[in-house]
Length: 425
Image (cartoon, rainbow, N blue to C red; front, top):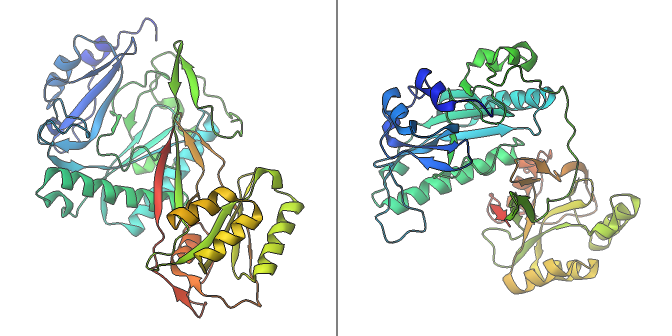
């Protein structure tokens, strides 16, 4: 990479954006070889205008916006109230599937996940697939066009963008809950950029390029050696072990500076939507309980003492996630949590009338997932005939637990759980 003249390469080779309906409505950005970032100061409508835009730089990585705008040049920030809100014309539905670190085994897992996600989207949504890309590193990108243009007819520009973001966030939650570990930073963000097909990945030297469904259906081993490698032949390890750790440190060193890290996860509210004073019992066990027989003895005792019905148990290897989808009074849940020594949730429920609990793994800024909860067992207390929460039975089915929600005689609340994607520093 040290001696590679990226600009010379792009002046003599074409990047691939002809598949975009109107490239001139997208923003183009690139990271230079010295680590600085640049934006195109002109509309990019052809290879010639693209080459002119980057001609003074040495771009190691090139990206384009997943949104198209009436004016994509010098977009104001979302928080900028001093300038007119930009007019969003379209937002591609994009999924970024990566498995870190780079290895043939992880690439194969990313490939099969991408193929399964593509089939799942086809069965569940009326989107038009417009492109599949190999990223040039750890995974793949799927690009869809939304055929329903209702949201893009909202007259107010800010309300339009917010409505699209809310719609994409709902889609992202469905995809994550279905078990597809896509990058949660991409799909719901209308201001996101993604790597441009036909460009070189600045770290691996591999070409990011579009592929067909036929190639996606073939094993990585059968074609990865045919991908152009600009640093010579890249030796991709067969396997790469990832240390199964808890959340990364809050700060890391980057060029001598302390840079704050972020984590991404999904959380569910214990409140029953559509009710005033009803809660489900959801919590992570304390670390001190472990994940062995002592922990399960405590949980079984809880189920017996409180005469609970269906209870689902998940583990992330360090703690147990306990989900009881019953309709329980808030005061009773406060009491149970307090007696278990889970005071923080108990106090939150007293003061705020509900609390949030993590139900996904935790993704760090490098795109690596940790602490993924895995389903262990379902405990059914046959002597109990409680009222169940529609929303939290729905949650369990989304998490892959086989529960027939038509079986319980009494159901309470609305059917959709309150779920959010959170970013923590």
